[in-house]
Image (cartoon, rainbow, N blue to C red):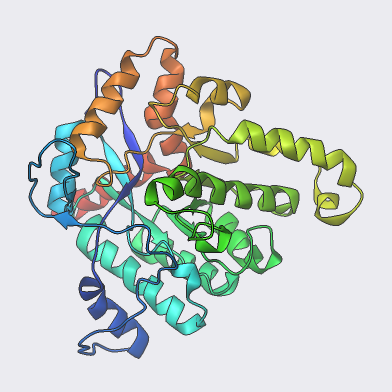
Length: 375
C-alpha cells in the first residue's frame, strides 16, 4: 500500500485496555496459574489526574467545539485503519501503562509487564501480520527490565522494549540500567523512550491549573531530562552499539538541548559524568544511533532535521489518540509540502521506522512462517 505514492510505516500507534481486560493475564503471571480475581488496584498506577480517556467502540458525531470520544479499536479495527489510511504496518504501544515506573515492588512490576506483553501478543500482534509490539518493560530495576526484554523479543516477537520514563526512580544515565542496555545490544533491538505527564518533574498543581498547560510542556520536557542524562553520563560510549528512539515529545527542542550540552561540556570535561564522553554531546545526537519523532505538521521540522541529519526522524500516527481522519489528512498534507525533497519524505514516512525496528525483515519472516504452516 502507499499514500500518494509514498510507503508509510507507523512508528508509534496505541491501544486502549482496561484493568478488567488485563486482569486475567496479570493473575496468571503473579500467582503462577490462572486465578479468578474480582479486581485489583495498581495495574495502572498514575501520579497525576490531568489526563483521562473516554473511548467508544463506534464513532459518534458531536456538536462543534465538543471533543468526541476516542476510537478504541481492537485488532480488526486496527486492520481497518491500516486499510483505509494506506499505512503498511504499525508498532503498537499501550495507553494506560505510562506510569509503570512508579511500581517499586520488583515481582509486581515484572508481573504487570509480562501480563501486558502477553495480552498484546494474544489480542493484537498475533491477529494481524501488520501489527508489531513494543514490549512494556518493568522498571523496578535494570535486571528485570533486561529479562523481560529478552523474553518479549525471543518468545513474543516484539520489535522493541519501551522505557516509560514517568516516575522512574533513576535517570537513564544511571548505571542501574546497564543490564538493560547490555541486553538491548545483545539482541540488536532499539530501546524506545516514551514520555508522558510526570508530576515528579513539577507537572502538578504547583505550577499548572489545566491539562492544556501540562500537555504543552510535559512530554518534551521529560524527554529533555533523559536525553541529557544518557548523553552526559556516557551511556553511548559505554554501550557503543546501543540505539534509542525518543517518542511522544516531538523533536523541535533538540537544537536547544544540543547547544546547552555543548556549552557545558568544555567546562566539565575533566570532572563528573562528562569524563566518560569521547566527543561533543551534540555529536551523539547526530551519530545515527539516536532517533527522533518528526511531527509532520510542525513548521520547525525542517530546521530541526537540518540541525541533526535527515535519516533519524520517524513518523508516528499516535492513532487512536489522533483520530483516523486527521491521521490521513496529516500524511497527505506532508506529502504535498514542497520544502522537503523526495528522499527526506521517504525517510520520514517509512525508511527510518524500518531501520529502527527492522519491520520489513520481521514482516517477511512472519509471511514465510505463515507460508510454511499452510504448506
